[in-house]
Length: 161
Image (cartoon, rainbow, N blue to C red; front, side, top):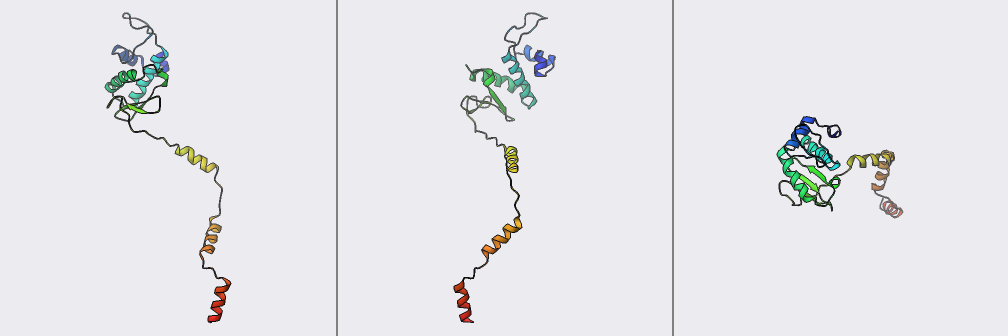
């Protein structure tokens, strides 16, 4: 069932369980042929390991990050932990929105990242856009820029001519 939920082969799950990367917390190994019983938190941990591996995080870094993240989230439910892989470090999102390094400098805050919904903003702008005839706008601007000839200026010109 865990393999079906996480999408990983049973051999991979078995290897991760034998090496201690993930462990079933309800009923663990008791001999050669046994049934492991996994909690929801265990399934979430397996999916997190799978996602980090698919993103290119080496298994050794996943192991180190796992122990550090467990220490960091004391009293925090596993479903509220958010992890990021930036290509060289596993980052954990803390309760107040702080990003903390889990590998390179465990516990040290890192630069905040900002995700901008540019595609959403573009669609929103397109939906509220109004078509405008730019030729009329340009003519209006030319007319404003042309030197105005006031009646007094015309009088001076006539008197001088």
